[in-house]
Amino acid sequence: QVQLVESGGGSVQAGESLRLSCATSPYTYFTTSCWGWFRQVPGKEREKVAAIYIAGGNTYYHDSVKGRFSISRDNAKNTVALQMNSLKPEDTAMYYCAADRASVGDRCLRGDSAEYMYWGQGTQVTVSS
Image (cartoon, rainbow, N blue to C red; front, side, top):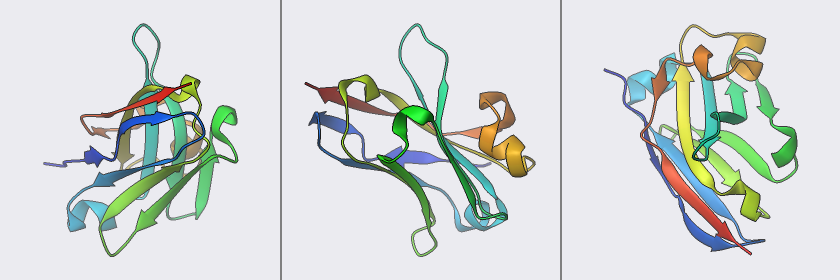
């Protein structure tokens, strides 16, 4: 059973930062190469924010977060993090961590939510102006 547990969400003012973490077991962490962060607001489709394909050392960012968000792995803590800087009210959403063992390369980086098998429960991010 693969479990992904997000943490780090909260309420901040515009311009501030948050760091989201996605924790999992050591086995899942070291056997899974495709990781992503998605966000969703009520009434809208889930949107990919960032992704990292470990085997290729590549990352992807949605245009709206380029230069502000950064996805990374922490081998010591078995976590995948999303550092979010210069937050804007339009970043307000439920944020989800996702992972998949089969997606490779561009499928991992640019694929939508259907490419990801495993999901966390989500953590809320609220940015006020």
